[in-house]
Length: 128
Length: 312
Image (cartoon, rainbow over all chains, first blue to last red; front, side, top):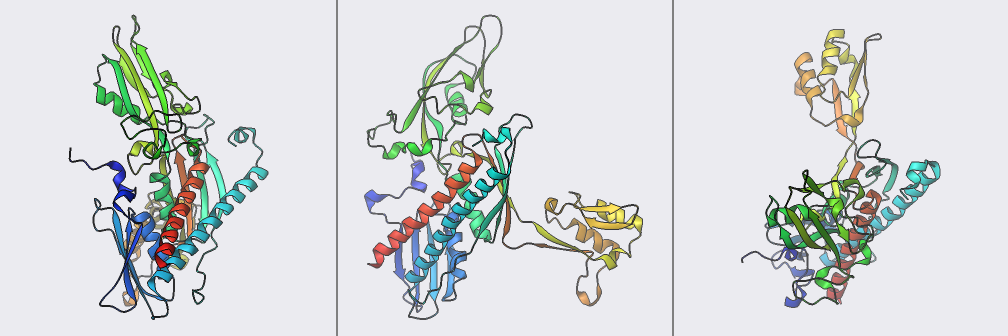
Protein backbone atom coordinates (compact mmCIF):
# COMPACT_ATOMS: atom_id res chain seq x y z
CA UNK A 1 0.00 0.00 0.00
CA UNK A 2 2.78 2.39 0.92
CA UNK A 3 5.41 0.77 -1.25
CA UNK A 4 6.76 3.13 -3.89
CA UNK A 5 7.10 1.84 -7.44
CA UNK A 6 10.38 0.00 -7.93
CA UNK A 7 11.21 1.85 -11.14
CA UNK A 8 11.07 5.15 -9.29
CA UNK A 9 14.73 4.67 -8.38
CA UNK A 10 16.05 5.05 -11.88
CA UNK A 11 13.31 6.22 -14.27
CA UNK A 12 12.82 9.95 -14.68
CA UNK A 13 9.32 11.06 -13.79
CA UNK A 14 8.68 13.10 -16.93
CA UNK A 15 4.98 13.48 -16.17
CA UNK A 16 5.76 15.74 -13.27
CA UNK A 17 8.39 17.59 -15.25
CA UNK A 18 11.46 16.03 -13.77
CA UNK A 19 14.59 16.86 -15.73
CA UNK A 20 17.90 15.03 -15.52
CA UNK A 21 20.04 17.97 -14.36
CA UNK A 22 18.91 21.05 -12.48
CA UNK A 23 21.42 23.82 -11.88
CA UNK A 24 21.33 26.44 -9.19
CA UNK A 25 24.10 29.01 -8.91
CA UNK A 26 25.53 29.49 -5.46
CA UNK A 27 24.55 32.81 -3.91
CA UNK A 28 27.34 33.09 -1.37
CA UNK A 29 30.38 31.73 -3.17
CA UNK A 30 31.76 33.10 -6.42
CA UNK A 31 31.97 30.92 -9.57
CA UNK A 32 30.17 28.05 -7.86
CA UNK A 33 26.95 26.14 -8.34
CA UNK A 34 25.08 23.00 -7.41
CA UNK A 35 23.87 20.48 -9.98
CA UNK A 36 21.06 18.19 -8.94
CA UNK A 37 21.30 14.96 -10.99
CA UNK A 38 17.95 13.23 -10.77
CA UNK A 39 17.64 9.44 -10.65
CA UNK A 40 21.38 8.88 -10.42
CA UNK A 41 23.68 7.29 -7.89
CA UNK A 42 27.37 6.68 -7.20
CA UNK A 43 27.79 4.88 -10.51
CA UNK A 44 27.83 8.19 -12.35
CA UNK A 45 28.47 10.57 -9.45
CA UNK A 46 31.89 9.23 -8.51
CA UNK A 47 32.88 8.96 -12.16
CA UNK A 48 32.08 12.62 -12.84
CA UNK A 49 33.61 13.87 -9.62
CA UNK A 50 36.96 12.14 -10.21
CA UNK A 51 37.06 13.49 -13.76
CA UNK A 52 36.28 17.02 -12.56
CA UNK A 53 39.10 16.88 -10.04
CA UNK A 54 41.58 16.33 -12.88
CA UNK A 55 40.59 19.61 -14.51
CA UNK A 56 42.94 22.47 -13.53
CA UNK A 57 40.09 24.98 -13.86
CA UNK A 58 38.18 23.36 -11.02
CA UNK A 59 38.81 24.59 -7.52
CA UNK A 60 36.21 22.45 -5.78
CA UNK A 61 34.22 19.43 -6.92
CA UNK A 62 32.22 17.14 -4.70
CA UNK A 63 29.01 15.18 -4.70
CA UNK A 64 26.75 13.58 -2.17
CA UNK A 65 23.88 11.14 -2.24
CA UNK A 66 21.72 12.41 0.64
CA UNK A 67 19.94 9.13 1.47
CA UNK A 68 19.64 5.73 -0.22
CA UNK A 69 15.88 6.13 -0.52
CA UNK A 70 16.14 9.54 -2.14
CA UNK A 71 17.05 9.19 -5.78
CA UNK A 72 19.17 12.17 -6.73
CA UNK A 73 22.72 13.46 -6.31
CA UNK A 74 23.88 16.95 -5.48
CA UNK A 75 27.15 17.86 -7.14
CA UNK A 76 28.87 21.07 -6.09
CA UNK A 77 31.41 22.59 -8.50
CA UNK A 78 33.50 25.73 -8.07
CA UNK A 79 35.83 27.00 -10.76
CA UNK A 80 38.97 29.08 -10.41
CA UNK A 81 37.86 32.20 -12.22
CA UNK A 82 34.79 33.76 -13.69
CA UNK A 83 35.78 33.10 -17.31
CA UNK A 84 34.91 29.43 -16.92
CA UNK A 85 31.42 28.58 -15.72
CA UNK A 86 30.69 25.40 -13.72
CA UNK A 87 28.36 24.28 -16.52
CA UNK A 88 31.20 24.39 -19.08
CA UNK A 89 33.51 22.44 -16.83
CA UNK A 90 30.89 19.76 -16.21
CA UNK A 91 30.04 19.38 -19.87
CA UNK A 92 33.71 19.08 -20.82
CA UNK A 93 34.17 16.42 -18.13
CA UNK A 94 31.21 14.48 -19.52
CA UNK A 95 32.56 14.77 -23.06
CA UNK A 96 35.99 13.49 -22.05
CA UNK A 97 34.44 10.54 -20.24
CA UNK A 98 32.23 9.75 -23.24
CA UNK A 99 35.34 9.79 -25.46
CA UNK A 100 37.15 7.51 -23.07
CA UNK A 101 34.32 4.98 -22.99
CA UNK A 102 33.97 5.09 -26.80
CA UNK A 103 37.70 4.39 -27.01
CA UNK A 104 37.28 1.49 -24.57
CA UNK A 105 34.67 -0.14 -26.80
CA UNK A 106 37.01 -0.15 -29.81
CA UNK A 107 39.88 -1.32 -27.60
CA UNK A 108 37.87 -4.24 -26.29
CA UNK A 109 36.66 -5.26 -29.73
CA UNK A 110 40.24 -5.09 -31.07
CA UNK A 111 41.42 -7.23 -28.17
CA UNK A 112 38.73 -9.80 -28.96
CA UNK A 113 39.72 -9.81 -32.65
CA UNK A 114 43.38 -10.34 -31.85
CA UNK A 115 42.48 -13.14 -29.45
CA UNK A 116 40.41 -14.82 -32.15
CA UNK A 117 43.33 -14.56 -34.57
CA UNK A 118 45.80 -16.01 -32.12
CA UNK A 119 43.65 -18.83 -30.82
CA UNK A 120 41.93 -21.23 -33.10
CA UNK A 121 40.77 -23.73 -30.52
CA UNK A 122 37.76 -25.56 -31.81
CA UNK A 123 35.99 -25.38 -28.46
CA UNK A 124 36.20 -21.62 -28.26
CA UNK A 125 35.09 -21.19 -31.84
CA UNK A 126 31.59 -22.14 -30.77
CA UNK A 127 31.59 -19.22 -28.37
CA UNK A 128 31.62 -16.67 -31.15
CA UNK B 1 35.00 26.44 -24.29
CA UNK B 2 38.24 26.83 -26.22
CA UNK B 3 40.41 27.23 -23.13
CA UNK B 4 39.49 23.80 -21.75
CA UNK B 5 41.96 21.11 -22.73
CA UNK B 6 40.87 17.56 -23.41
CA UNK B 7 41.42 15.47 -20.31
CA UNK B 8 40.80 12.03 -21.57
CA UNK B 9 42.92 9.01 -20.84
CA UNK B 10 44.06 6.45 -23.37
CA UNK B 11 42.82 3.36 -21.64
CA UNK B 12 43.67 -0.03 -23.13
CA UNK B 13 42.15 -3.45 -22.66
CA UNK B 14 44.34 -6.51 -23.11
CA UNK B 15 45.11 -10.07 -21.95
CA UNK B 16 41.64 -11.51 -22.51
CA UNK B 17 41.08 -15.07 -21.39
CA UNK B 18 37.99 -17.18 -20.96
CA UNK B 19 37.43 -19.90 -18.37
CA UNK B 20 34.73 -22.42 -17.74
CA UNK B 21 32.76 -21.98 -14.56
CA UNK B 22 32.71 -25.74 -14.06
CA UNK B 23 35.70 -27.54 -15.58
CA UNK B 24 34.74 -29.57 -18.59
CA UNK B 25 31.26 -28.26 -19.29
CA UNK B 26 32.50 -26.16 -22.23
CA UNK B 27 30.50 -23.11 -21.23
CA UNK B 28 32.96 -20.27 -20.97
CA UNK B 29 31.11 -17.92 -18.71
CA UNK B 30 34.13 -16.38 -16.94
CA UNK B 31 36.06 -13.66 -18.74
CA UNK B 32 39.32 -12.23 -17.42
CA UNK B 33 40.95 -9.16 -18.86
CA UNK B 34 43.19 -6.28 -17.85
CA UNK B 35 42.23 -2.62 -18.11
CA UNK B 36 45.26 -0.32 -18.13
CA UNK B 37 45.66 3.42 -18.13
CA UNK B 38 42.34 4.07 -16.52
CA UNK B 39 41.15 5.30 -13.16
CA UNK B 40 39.60 3.55 -10.16
CA UNK B 41 36.36 5.48 -10.64
CA UNK B 42 36.00 4.24 -14.24
CA UNK B 43 36.66 0.64 -13.20
CA UNK B 44 34.14 0.92 -10.38
CA UNK B 45 31.53 2.50 -12.63
CA UNK B 46 31.93 -0.34 -15.12
CA UNK B 47 31.65 -2.90 -12.35
CA UNK B 48 28.50 -1.32 -10.91
CA UNK B 49 26.94 -1.02 -14.34
CA UNK B 50 27.70 -4.65 -15.20
CA UNK B 51 26.01 -5.81 -12.04
CA UNK B 52 23.03 -3.49 -11.93
CA UNK B 53 22.29 -1.81 -15.23
CA UNK B 54 22.64 -4.41 -17.97
CA UNK B 55 19.13 -5.53 -18.91
CA UNK B 56 18.14 -9.20 -19.10
CA UNK B 57 14.98 -11.27 -19.08
CA UNK B 58 13.44 -12.69 -15.93
CA UNK B 59 10.06 -14.03 -14.99
CA UNK B 60 8.03 -11.24 -13.47
CA UNK B 61 4.43 -12.42 -13.39
CA UNK B 62 3.21 -15.87 -12.53
CA UNK B 63 -0.39 -16.91 -13.19
CA UNK B 64 -1.05 -20.09 -11.27
CA UNK B 65 -3.74 -22.43 -12.50
CA UNK B 66 -3.06 -25.23 -10.07
CA UNK B 67 -0.60 -25.61 -7.23
CA UNK B 68 -1.07 -28.59 -4.94
CA UNK B 69 2.62 -28.86 -4.12
CA UNK B 70 4.24 -28.59 -0.71
CA UNK B 71 5.44 -25.04 -1.48
CA UNK B 72 2.95 -22.19 -1.47
CA UNK B 73 2.22 -19.95 -4.46
CA UNK B 74 4.47 -17.01 -3.63
CA UNK B 75 7.33 -19.32 -2.67
CA UNK B 76 7.18 -21.00 -6.06
CA UNK B 77 6.78 -17.64 -7.82
CA UNK B 78 9.86 -16.27 -6.06
CA UNK B 79 11.93 -19.26 -7.17
CA UNK B 80 10.72 -18.92 -10.73
CA UNK B 81 11.79 -15.27 -10.83
CA UNK B 82 15.35 -16.19 -9.99
CA UNK B 83 15.77 -18.64 -12.88
CA UNK B 84 18.24 -17.19 -15.41
CA UNK B 85 16.84 -16.92 -18.94
CA UNK B 86 18.94 -16.61 -22.10
CA UNK B 87 18.99 -12.94 -22.94
CA UNK B 88 21.36 -12.55 -25.91
CA UNK B 89 18.59 -10.99 -27.98
CA UNK B 90 17.50 -8.58 -25.25
CA UNK B 91 18.21 -5.50 -27.38
CA UNK B 92 15.36 -6.32 -29.72
CA UNK B 93 12.84 -6.09 -26.92
CA UNK B 94 11.38 -3.11 -25.13
CA UNK B 95 10.70 -2.44 -21.51
CA UNK B 96 7.12 -3.35 -20.64
CA UNK B 97 6.58 0.02 -19.00
CA UNK B 98 7.26 1.87 -22.26
CA UNK B 99 5.80 -0.63 -24.72
CA UNK B 100 3.36 1.01 -27.08
CA UNK B 101 1.32 -2.10 -27.83
CA UNK B 102 0.46 -2.85 -24.24
CA UNK B 103 -1.93 -0.77 -22.21
CA UNK B 104 -1.10 0.63 -18.83
CA UNK B 105 -2.94 -2.20 -17.15
CA UNK B 106 -1.27 -5.05 -15.35
CA UNK B 107 -0.58 -7.40 -18.23
CA UNK B 108 2.33 -6.99 -20.64
CA UNK B 109 1.30 -9.42 -23.36
CA UNK B 110 2.74 -8.47 -26.71
CA UNK B 111 5.70 -10.23 -28.23
CA UNK B 112 7.68 -6.97 -28.41
CA UNK B 113 8.05 -6.73 -24.68
CA UNK B 114 7.27 -10.05 -23.05
CA UNK B 115 7.88 -13.78 -23.30
CA UNK B 116 5.36 -16.39 -22.13
CA UNK B 117 6.68 -19.48 -20.40
CA UNK B 118 4.41 -22.36 -19.47
CA UNK B 119 4.88 -25.12 -16.98
CA UNK B 120 2.60 -28.12 -16.42
CA UNK B 121 3.86 -31.09 -14.41
CA UNK B 122 2.01 -33.79 -12.49
CA UNK B 123 3.54 -36.06 -9.93
CA UNK B 124 4.40 -39.54 -11.26
CA UNK B 125 2.52 -42.39 -9.54
CA UNK B 126 5.56 -44.42 -8.53
CA UNK B 127 8.32 -42.00 -7.48
CA UNK B 128 9.10 -38.38 -6.52
CA UNK B 129 8.93 -36.04 -9.48
CA UNK B 130 11.42 -33.19 -9.61
CA UNK B 131 10.12 -30.11 -11.42
CA UNK B 132 13.10 -28.37 -13.00
CA UNK B 133 13.63 -25.31 -15.15
CA UNK B 134 13.87 -27.58 -18.20
CA UNK B 135 10.14 -28.34 -17.89
CA UNK B 136 9.30 -24.88 -19.19
CA UNK B 137 7.81 -24.30 -22.66
CA UNK B 138 8.69 -20.91 -24.02
CA UNK B 139 6.68 -18.91 -26.55
CA UNK B 140 10.00 -17.86 -28.05
CA UNK B 141 12.66 -20.58 -28.18
CA UNK B 142 15.45 -17.98 -28.10
CA UNK B 143 14.49 -17.07 -24.53
CA UNK B 144 14.46 -20.10 -22.27
CA UNK B 145 16.16 -21.21 -19.05
CA UNK B 146 19.94 -21.08 -19.48
CA UNK B 147 21.26 -24.42 -20.86
CA UNK B 148 23.84 -24.75 -18.12
CA UNK B 149 21.26 -24.36 -15.38
CA UNK B 150 18.24 -26.16 -16.80
CA UNK B 151 18.42 -28.65 -13.94
CA UNK B 152 17.56 -25.97 -11.38
CA UNK B 153 14.99 -27.64 -9.11
CA UNK B 154 11.79 -25.72 -8.61
CA UNK B 155 9.78 -28.10 -6.45
CA UNK B 156 9.35 -31.84 -5.84
CA UNK B 157 6.01 -33.52 -6.45
CA UNK B 158 4.39 -36.61 -5.04
CA UNK B 159 1.72 -38.74 -6.68
CA UNK B 160 -1.41 -36.64 -7.01
CA UNK B 161 0.33 -33.26 -6.70
CA UNK B 162 0.33 -30.95 -9.68
CA UNK B 163 1.88 -27.67 -10.72
CA UNK B 164 0.39 -25.75 -13.62
CA UNK B 165 1.25 -22.14 -14.28
CA UNK B 166 1.92 -19.51 -16.93
CA UNK B 167 4.75 -17.04 -16.51
CA UNK B 168 5.44 -13.77 -18.21
CA UNK B 169 9.09 -12.78 -18.50
CA UNK B 170 9.99 -9.16 -19.14
CA UNK B 171 13.07 -7.04 -19.64
CA UNK B 172 14.49 -5.35 -16.59
CA UNK B 173 17.64 -4.36 -14.73
CA UNK B 174 19.00 -5.36 -11.36
CA UNK B 175 18.29 -1.83 -10.13
CA UNK B 176 14.71 -3.02 -9.87
CA UNK B 177 15.28 -6.56 -8.56
CA UNK B 178 18.38 -8.74 -8.29
CA UNK B 179 16.83 -11.47 -10.44
CA UNK B 180 17.61 -9.34 -13.49
CA UNK B 181 21.35 -9.26 -12.86
CA UNK B 182 23.34 -10.97 -15.65
CA UNK B 183 26.41 -11.62 -13.49
CA UNK B 184 27.27 -14.04 -10.74
CA UNK B 185 30.41 -12.36 -9.58
CA UNK B 186 32.07 -9.38 -11.22
CA UNK B 187 35.14 -8.06 -9.51
CA UNK B 188 38.28 -6.16 -10.31
CA UNK B 189 41.60 -6.48 -8.59
CA UNK B 190 44.55 -4.12 -8.39
CA UNK B 191 47.87 -5.90 -8.81
CA UNK B 192 50.51 -4.98 -6.23
CA UNK B 193 54.12 -3.91 -6.71
CA UNK B 194 55.98 -6.05 -4.18
CA UNK B 195 59.58 -5.18 -3.27
CA UNK B 196 61.55 -7.40 -0.97
CA UNK B 197 64.20 -5.86 1.23
CA UNK B 198 66.84 -8.52 0.65
CA UNK B 199 69.40 -7.07 3.08
CA UNK B 200 66.91 -7.28 5.94
CA UNK B 201 65.80 -10.73 4.83
CA UNK B 202 69.33 -12.01 5.29
CA UNK B 203 69.09 -11.12 8.99
CA UNK B 204 66.58 -13.90 9.37
CA UNK B 205 68.00 -17.39 9.30
CA UNK B 206 66.65 -20.06 7.00
CA UNK B 207 64.13 -21.00 9.68
CA UNK B 208 63.05 -17.41 10.03
CA UNK B 209 62.71 -16.97 6.29
CA UNK B 210 60.60 -20.11 5.97
CA UNK B 211 58.34 -19.02 8.82
CA UNK B 212 58.01 -15.56 7.31
CA UNK B 213 57.09 -16.97 3.91
CA UNK B 214 54.50 -19.16 5.67
CA UNK B 215 52.89 -16.13 7.28
CA UNK B 216 51.31 -15.12 3.99
CA UNK B 217 47.81 -16.66 3.86
CA UNK B 218 47.72 -16.77 0.06
CA UNK B 219 51.34 -17.93 -0.42
CA UNK B 220 52.57 -14.96 -2.42
CA UNK B 221 56.21 -15.64 -1.55
CA UNK B 222 58.37 -18.62 -2.18
CA UNK B 223 61.34 -19.86 -0.17
CA UNK B 224 63.95 -21.89 -1.97
CA UNK B 225 65.53 -24.30 0.54
CA UNK B 226 68.56 -24.96 -1.60
CA UNK B 227 69.72 -21.42 -2.23
CA UNK B 228 68.07 -19.80 0.78
CA UNK B 229 66.41 -17.21 -1.44
CA UNK B 230 63.05 -15.64 -0.85
CA UNK B 231 61.23 -14.52 -3.98
CA UNK B 232 57.85 -13.26 -5.01
CA UNK B 233 56.06 -16.22 -6.60
CA UNK B 234 52.46 -15.12 -7.13
CA UNK B 235 51.89 -11.37 -6.79
CA UNK B 236 48.38 -11.78 -8.20
CA UNK B 237 47.32 -13.65 -5.05
CA UNK B 238 48.10 -10.75 -2.76
CA UNK B 239 45.07 -9.45 -0.89
CA UNK B 240 46.84 -6.53 0.88
CA UNK B 241 46.19 -8.10 4.26
CA UNK B 242 49.62 -6.87 5.51
CA UNK B 243 50.27 -10.12 7.38
CA UNK B 244 53.76 -10.29 5.89
CA UNK B 245 54.54 -6.74 7.03
CA UNK B 246 53.27 -7.37 10.56
CA UNK B 247 55.10 -10.66 10.78
CA UNK B 248 58.28 -9.00 9.55
CA UNK B 249 58.05 -6.27 12.16
CA UNK B 250 57.60 -8.88 14.82
CA UNK B 251 60.76 -10.68 13.74
CA UNK B 252 63.02 -7.76 12.90
CA UNK B 253 61.56 -4.97 14.95
CA UNK B 254 60.90 -1.46 13.78
CA UNK B 255 63.53 0.53 11.96
CA UNK B 256 65.41 3.55 13.22
CA UNK B 257 64.08 7.07 13.51
CA UNK B 258 60.44 5.98 13.70
CA UNK B 259 60.36 5.11 9.99
CA UNK B 260 59.38 1.57 9.18
CA UNK B 261 62.08 -0.26 7.26
CA UNK B 262 60.03 -3.33 6.49
CA UNK B 263 61.00 -6.64 5.01
CA UNK B 264 58.63 -5.99 2.14
CA UNK B 265 56.92 -2.98 0.60
CA UNK B 266 53.58 -3.52 -1.06
CA UNK B 267 52.05 -0.78 -3.17
CA UNK B 268 49.06 -1.07 -5.48
CA UNK B 269 49.81 -0.33 -9.13
CA UNK B 270 47.94 2.74 -10.26
CA UNK B 271 45.60 2.52 -13.20
CA UNK B 272 45.80 -1.22 -13.84
CA UNK B 273 42.74 -3.34 -13.05
CA UNK B 274 42.34 -7.06 -13.49
CA UNK B 275 38.68 -7.75 -14.16
CA UNK B 276 36.91 -11.06 -13.68
CA UNK B 277 33.40 -11.21 -15.10
CA UNK B 278 31.36 -14.30 -14.40
CA UNK B 279 28.00 -14.40 -16.11
CA UNK B 280 25.01 -16.53 -15.16
CA UNK B 281 24.84 -17.73 -18.76
CA UNK B 282 22.06 -15.29 -19.62
CA UNK B 283 24.56 -13.49 -21.84
CA UNK B 284 28.14 -14.06 -22.81
CA UNK B 285 30.49 -12.16 -20.48
CA UNK B 286 31.90 -10.06 -23.34
CA UNK B 287 28.36 -9.01 -24.18
CA UNK B 288 27.83 -8.00 -20.56
CA UNK B 289 30.92 -5.80 -20.68
CA UNK B 290 30.10 -4.16 -24.00
CA UNK B 291 26.49 -3.53 -22.95
CA UNK B 292 27.73 -1.99 -19.71
CA UNK B 293 30.02 0.44 -21.55
CA UNK B 294 27.13 1.31 -23.89
CA UNK B 295 24.89 2.00 -20.93
CA UNK B 296 27.49 4.30 -19.35
CA UNK B 297 27.89 6.05 -22.69
CA UNK B 298 24.13 6.53 -23.04
CA UNK B 299 23.88 7.99 -19.58
CA UNK B 300 26.71 10.42 -20.22
CA UNK B 301 25.27 11.49 -23.57
CA UNK B 302 21.82 12.00 -22.07
CA UNK B 303 23.31 14.22 -19.40
CA UNK B 304 25.27 16.16 -21.99
CA UNK B 305 22.11 16.77 -24.02
CA UNK B 306 20.32 17.93 -20.93
CA UNK B 307 23.14 20.35 -20.11
CA UNK B 308 23.33 21.69 -23.66
CA UNK B 309 19.59 22.24 -23.68
CA UNK B 310 19.68 24.18 -20.46
CA UNK B 311 22.64 26.26 -21.65
CA UNK B 312 20.75 27.39 -24.76
